[in-house]
Length: 445
Ligand SMILES: [Zn+2]
Image (cartoon, rainbow, N blue to C red):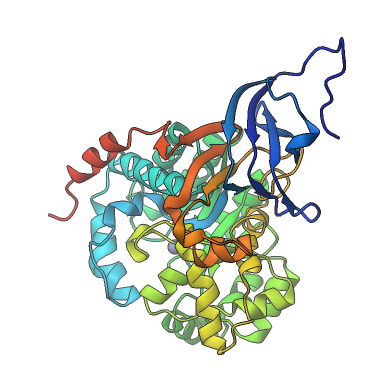
């Protein structure tokens, strides 16, 4: 398994070696490796084992010493709207519909390509600094999101927004499907780190034809389809009045549910809808902080997990959170379900860490390449400094990741084998410049 340096044999040169530290692999076997060693070449994990098994580490061009650290897969944020960091704190403490109609939609009407690019780069900086290596985005002017993501070095599923209302970059909603197809054509196979996708805003803002047509396009190009599903009780009532169907049944009858569909929020679902999600292998993105902040309700996550539905964690946009910190999201998810069920056993720390890593990868159909640290997978990993008072002592790393660690404990971040943050310094983004650009923007006048 491991690389042996036999006499006379030519040394294999790796791009990066991570030496020492406790490795939390999230793999079904070898869950923990104490004093580990990870060898990376051309973005792939070539070997992951105990350090002592490979004495000669001089074969790597670059090394990171991880003594006293925890090494784990990079966190996966399964739902956000990256450019919405521009609207962080602009309007808070309002109901969802009022927040959307009176503040967010008017602000979005003023968005330019430039704003979307810099807003996304700001989000990418925040995400890397907080240990996220992959995210799933749904927004408008998604070409600009993709350009910023490419510049940041992050991995992402990027979905062009589809809505039957005028939207940034699409004055005439009749053009939304054409726009979607062009986006997918542009970004499919353009970058190994970017998967294009479709994001239908919701069953209440997209017509039946729009939903069907968008899903058809994603099937034709074999890319994911995202949709906000049953986020508020009000939308569920309105849909019922119109179609005499609950939202999941409505989408099933339109033939838009399958294993490439990622349903976001999924709060107001009945038992049969949960069974339908399981039957059609629909994935779920759970966004507890946004749901709490907008007062939308609590998604039945324990019931989903009992059925074997794949549930990833998401932050939602920074305007309804108000940050993209997955450590906070994990902490909130674990506690929200405990207090809702009045049962501290209902969602344990390990399950939550899985939701932020391997289950997130499964939600995005990326589990073949990311979500755990295993030989042959892409090297997306974070190194957390455990030498901190609030992380001492350490009995159970899962517990610390969820309940005690802060995003600022992440010291180094590696995406696709490339070091994008070293000693908390971003190497792909000039964050001072990005913050300066965003501060100078005007979209509230
Ligand atoms: Zn959302």
